[in-house]
Image 1 (tube, chains in turn cyan, green):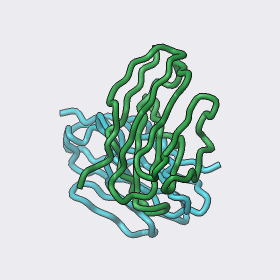
Image 2 (spheres, rainbow over the protein chains, first blue to last red; image 1 turned 90 degrees about the horizontal axis):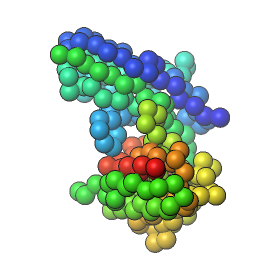
Image 3 (tube, rainbow over the protein chains, first blue to last red; image 1 turned 180 degrees about the vertical axis):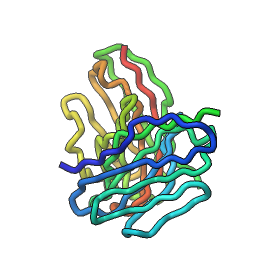
Length: 110
Length: 114
């Protein structure tokens, strides 16, 4: 059965800290890995990764995929209170459906 | 470009009652998904449509849940009869096509079953 596992499940940091969120997967016919940020409503898209070793970057957020070891990390540098959210990792196979992990709840304290 | 529209945003019902949720995907998106997100968990796929056909409904509790997308555009998800454990946010998402990668989510419909 396909599965996506995220760690840690929750994290509390202070503003300015750097955090690393982990996502490992076992997905048949893996095609892509996506990161979403979820505040109080719908998940919003952050990154889609398809190739190993190529870092995707957007401001203070970056992510990389390792297809050999079957994992991805999401880094957030100089965290702000607005980064507090649930971060969801999801993978697709060739059917297109997203298989989500449990999410990592990040709380950034001032 | 209009996003994925869902209604109602909130619904409170008693167990054994029925409820229906509606979703209108982004125009031109062939693939539509219904996800169930229970508090503290990641979203779980209930059903995936490609145009008006079902691609995957393996995790849909078919004794009480049903969904349709008759004209290949908007979709309805129904629960009848509801159980306490159905309390969750029901997220609709759409994508251009299967395997297109990014899914676009609606705001969700929050169901509370008392």
